[in-house]
Image (cartoon, rainbow, N blue to C red; front, top):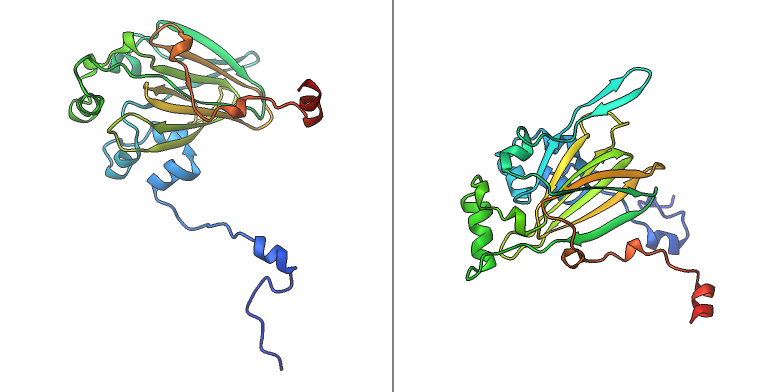
Length: 247
């Protein structure tokens, strides 16, 4: 009797066997899920930020807060964004100077984008961020909202994947990846997101619906403060034959 072959893939073509990759279904920690596979936004909006594991994964200055969407029978939906004098933006002392809207067609993406932080003169960026976000994180009066662009984002239609990446000098490099639902998908993933300058951000639409977002900025739009990193995904490449003809 021949010895039983213990390779479960032995009956496949050798080239196929060499190309196989097995998915890891092992349990991941909260920090790993936030940084790698992604997590539902509602789990972050309602999370205890003082939890040591979450604190090690969170990018300083980022805020994720819950929204409530109310059904209006026979008519549609109603949902607030945020109030100036109460709630999360009042707590951190931020109120946008400009509000805008954007539509992303289904299966498209934006970013990565980044906005430059404003650092006081004669102050090293490392020292400033250490004071601002680590030594005095609740002293919101230190923040230079009128001199640098902070974003406040909301999604009213579709489903979005958002990825944030720390890029400020001296702060630990961290990634936050999470999934947000638009208003027609009522539930815990209806959230608002505050993104500080110096944090690169990208958005990708999920599913077959267009993604509609409304966002506020702490300063008026200035093109020179819109930095782009690895943003070629935004370009629709021409067919090769078209490119040859145009060349």
